[in-house]
Length: 192
Length: 189
Image: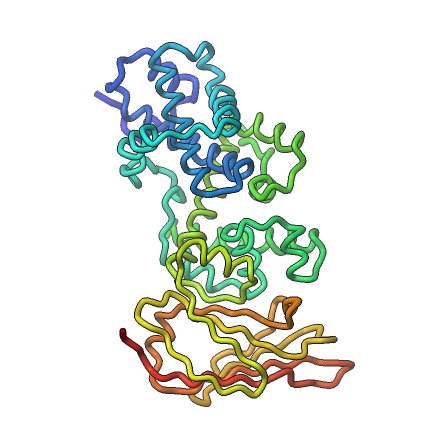
């Protein structure tokens, strides 16, 4: 019987990679979804850092994970115990080449993204949108502005510091406090 | 036995990384650890989820806020319709949002020279609804920008929305401007 998502969550990265590599394509959907759930957020952060574009970062995460799964099935991942390094290397290669294909995006979207909450066992993987909005409104004006500039307008601390006429260090302190409050508010709601 | 969880990468560090604030060697070292550490991967997922949720909330026009031109530009790129009104001190400006507007924004102009801390007082129909400290200095053009969900404005009856800005210069309170939006009620195309 296939593992439940809870049981798969306890499987180490290496074991997960070996399961995918040793089984025929089409028989490890749950394991592939778990690999995607674990690594897609990291690749998206990587993409945001290097591509400076949310849509491109989303595409990169889909492309990298699909290619990784293909390589696992093809026996091209020599060291499953270093699957994280493989995914990082693939992210670097694909970000450099900006190799994004419609076929890959459509395939991965159909397989994983549409599954939404089904592949998300962590409490914050899919956050309750009305609650996040309420938590944003509950922040102080300055805290909310720094969060918007950071996560929506993609501005770094020095740039935000210019807008607010404070030092970059002060922006980082405000951001730290604002994120603490936002996480507390959002996660508090997620737990209740 | 429970193994100690890795705490090497904090939410702050991951946020700074994603914002591009780390040097290339620092970012590379962080990536090497991040992609091999399950605990830090969970923290990265938290940052990623928060960032995506904030973007979704803003795109859903569910949050009002003081903003900068950077935020307005991003809203435009995302196709968010912002009905903007520009007001000078003493202005009475007719305002309304249409049913396809997402946000209503105001540009408040005035003499902000020497203004350290700016206080905002807002009244709707003569009733005070907000009194707060404005978190940012005026733009180089001498403006403050604020947006609010059009859905909230749309629910208002025909009423005046009055905004007053003031500051304190050398212990003496100075009014920067009083601005009145004359709301005409809901509008339909």
